[in-house]
Amino acid sequence: MSERLMNAAMSGEDRISALPDALLLHTLSLLPSDETVRTCVLARRWQNLWRYTPSLRLVHGLVNGSGSGSRFRSAEHFDKFASHLIVLRDRSPLVNCEIQLYGTGDRQSCPYIQAIQLWIQYALACQVKVLHVTDYCGEGRLLLNVPFISGHLMALHLQNVILKSSMDFASCPVLESLEMHYCDIYMRKLSSKSLKRLSIADCSFPNQPRTRISVPGLVFLLLDDCDAWTPFLECMPLLETAFIRLERCLDVCDGDSDNYCGQHGCDGCGGLGSYQSVLLNGLSKAISLELIASTYTYIFRRDVEWSSMFGRLKTLLLNEWCAVNDLHSLVCILRCSPMLEKLTLQLFNDRDTVSAIRMEGNHDPIEQSFVCAHLRVAKIECLELDEMVRQIWNILRTCGVHPENISIKTKQSGLKRFTIEKLLW
Image (tube, rainbow, N blue to C red; front, side, top):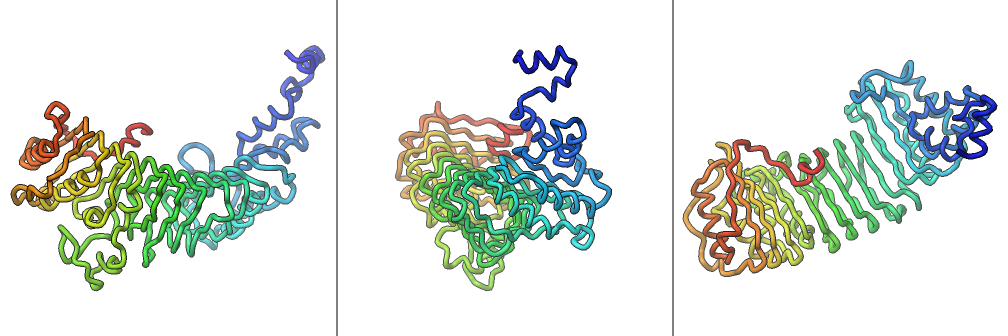
């Protein structure tokens, strides 16, 4: 025990107040900002500590896991508190800033919607490293139009916000992580040279022409279950791991559900003529790749016709989209993946899937005139052993995969999951 704490204990003084400032500030940073401010009445030593906490947590709703209720009497009360706080607080550097909004009102009943832009600018001016902005209301209230200019911002997390125009993070040279969940993304372009991790889940891309993503330094990519138009990926030469799931996108050809017609009058194909590859060329440098799509989503099947070699790919997971058109897409990907070591196929076919998959005989032997020299593990997960599984077995054998390296496992559930989901949930 330090001499200061020992003296405090002997004198009956508040032991907590005797703790070092750094420890007290860390403790205060774990609280919502309104609770942090209330500590000023505890003792003289606490009067100004809240001004220097390295964390700012502007939380409108109750922190009880459900997001129900409010910490303030009204939205106006929350707006007044937050606006006064950023005026009175010392401009010491922030490690973390969280802005969490609750309620069910629209813009008119939420006066702080416009003030949020100022709160974000304040956090950036305080050299914040990690910034979270969440609108739990989820009614499209929050249009985020703050210019992100910071030499200190390292991670940005956005949820239930609207993003328009373009997001150029050239003025955020150390930004490494960007997460967007349940956002409406109207951006023409998202670009960053420093970004290493990008996670986009349950977002909407209504924009045409489709959003262009330019992140040449990216190492990890998650694009999960987004609707409207699939974004265009530029080359990512440093990419190591990517998880892509397309099950709600509008990229569905009206002319031919098995291929694509390419006509501008087709709601699904319109505008795709100028894109040789929407996704797969940008993913061609990945080491580990998981591609999941509904059977009628044709964007992967279209891309494989134009995709480059997957020269670094070692681990690959696909589901039944690759089985449409007599397994042509599967053959194309295997042929373009000379270093592949592990292949997993999740073939959980429902009636719609079976009706879409055409089994029209064997492949042209010329298509299979290649060898998967490094493929040591091939796993087929399916509901039953059918003709499709038999054809996949024959393809793998023709590619030089030893039977001992091919495992077939039947499962009762048709649930399709990423490997990353098994790890995190």
